[in-house]
Amino acid sequence: MSQDQFVLPGDIIVTGDYQPEQNVILDGDRLMSTAIGFSEIKDDLVTVTPLTGLYIPKTDDLVVGKIVSHNALSWEVNINSYYPGILTASDIFGKDYSPSRDDLSLKLNTGDIVLARIANLGSRDPLITITGENLGKIDSGELVKISPAKIPRLTEKNGSMIQTIEESTNATITVGQNGLIILKCDNSAGLKKAIASVKMIGMIQYEVNIEDKIQNILDESN
Amino acid sequence: MTNLSIIDKLKRSKILDLLQEGKRIDGRALDESRPLVIDTGVIPHANGSARARLGDTEIVSGIKVQPDRPFPDMGDKGIFMCTAEILPLAHPSAETGPPQPPVIELARVVDRGIRESGMIDLSQFVLEKDKAVIGLFADCVVTDHDGNLFDACSYAAVAAIITSTVPKWEMKDDKPTLIEDQESPTPITTIPVSVTMGRIGEFIIVDPNLDEWECLDARITITTNSDGNIVALQKGGDDGFSVEQLVKCSELSIVSGKKIREIIKQATEGTQ
Image (cartoon, rainbow over all chains, first blue to last red; front, side):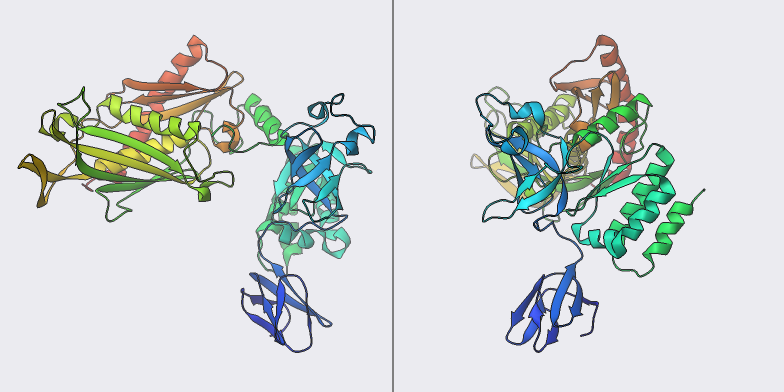
């Protein structure tokens, strides 16, 4: 099979001396897909980019999460993954955090949206942090969800696609690697176009001329 | 159902902002229901069945008719019972296990709407007074949850009942005995239609979807019969309605109910 081949779970992508990467397993000398998606062979590395699926956390990834609950020591954050993100109380209150003195719900409450970074992937649920530039609670904007598998499409070529959308609509786009995107724009027409463009990228399964399609949306009634 | 999913604060504020402009998040008018599609005969071996799709909420309802003992205080009437279940595939937060209070409420509200309208003439279901009657059981299964399960379940159950047939039983040796190949349509007297409305701030919205459902201050489900009379009512939520709002809800339920009744009639025409 050649590069960029549509594969199903169990499909043999290539046979020989290759290394299995994301969504690929080695069966003898056969490299087999474990997901529905497109295979890619780069040097001796074989990967499959899935068409759908939840977010697999990676350290240092920027993610957008929703607070779903909290206990005395941490918040549980839905990061559109198989695992909940854990935001520790000390991340916000500092090292001298005391459960008896500090109330977590005063800082972040259920339903709040946060921009966070994956801090640590241990054996348990991923730890996230909101200490850092531009990280923290998001108070305004529009939240759009696309498949995490489509995020590379949005950010490829050093984010040129995002730049195009931002320049044409005056919107600010914050992309979480987990498929959640926050769009902010002062004029509603621009916001509408920016949302439509991002959703379009989320909808398209496999096409080469995405740029043209996005440009069409942006050019509409301009 | 109110705690089924947590709506993010950004969406909540957008819903509230849009309502101020007289708009809803999915573009509907405030008094507009989502599109309703009803398919009948979806379960071949049931005595009657229907699938109702209200927007992205989908319910499958099946009818089972069988002889039973009457309730002690209603020996001269048959039995009608409605149950409901949310399948785990309906929503990420739905779990298997014993029904939670919101699901029990769902079944009871749907049951009450149908029962109190007198939709089924249960007096025709008596085999022997105080001893044996026919029971009609409507089981509603939620296969897709996008809010307002009350109405969707009610439409599915009502459509399934209309299309159902009742096998013939006779008392032989003091026992109900099935007479093969003899069926009659279920005796229907009226078509009850439930309409659920929600209040967010001072705005009344008809048929809230799941996002709106999470923002409701209060909700009310009003069931009307074919004559446009109110036959059942259930209020839920932490807050209340003013008298004016209640009057408005009643009027909305009658107007909206009339349109939906036509859709149910068309979907079930000639199916018995």
